[in-house]
Length: 439
Image (cartoon, rainbow, N blue to C red; front, side, top):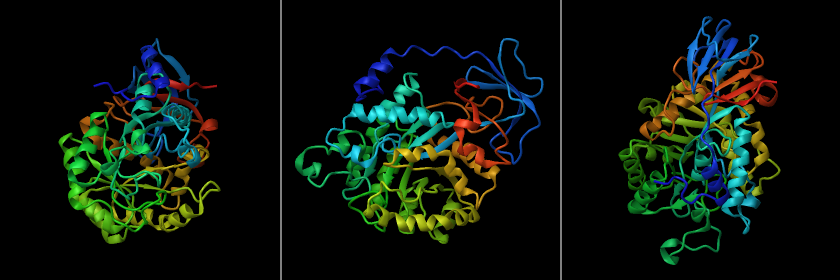
């Protein structure tokens, strides 16, 4: 299968012309203190040897006479950060641009590519894209034509008519009656799928193009036009159709949902992960813990000047509730993951790593960094054989993939260091290749 099908022409050309990336010479990080992604403290000063794209050895004796040596001088070496809820395209443009009649796949692709490089240079080396046009960008990054993080793609999210992913303009009619795809569907942003048959087809279409997991809209949203926040979306049978199709491909469905009713229906259907969930009650959180359901949660950005009044009003209950849900979910023992979910406000992306500081009322610095490295990597691994990259991520250990950050200081003692990656991330390495050189 040609994974570049439908790719914007300028990206397709870059993919075709991209030369094979030469193997990285061995790199020795000497005299570093290691945060391994799991433990609550840093190691004593040690060496970490990277050979190819993996960590070959850790310890004072780790060495290679041909390796490039980076003297850590006691700085911290840690795993690259992982954000499990991003929208590489929707987060790269504002609403006016996305709704502009002049928007083309080329314009959207260029904005997403520029955003991807900036994201990698913030130390975010892996992401899970939670809906939107993504396959062309991922193909370009994997081919070495564009710099960016590893991407676990969902593809076009699935929405019922009038659901959170129904992105039609008011003048666009239903495909079933007009025979025409909406503009958003043509751009690969969403599939409007009603009934078991449509859901099966839409799920299989995303899997055909390489989706590592499937995103379905199971409840109302704060950034959509047609659905109030409290509504429950997709019938049990429709949700089960998506789950069955994904399970046949040995991967999973995650759903957008806020309310107990929407989440409980999704759990009954066999969904393995919930996106958002800020409005959940304690009983539903306990149910999630008992069944091992992941909660991919965020501390969303407060209202900005770019948000219209209707979106501000819809967001308010979620923004208010996120001040308590993290503590309650942690107390219940729910499997937690962290993401940012920046939409339609590109300037906010610069604060991506700083969003982790918002978790400090409920987590220690070590717990926060574990959440954004090891724990998030465990959620990525839920894709099983549909994971696009083989190897362990989110940890610094022998045999793991070499996605690494060299931090100027101790982020366990001063978590604020991660909020200024341009200043404090001395080296950024992805897949054994240095993408930010030490000065």
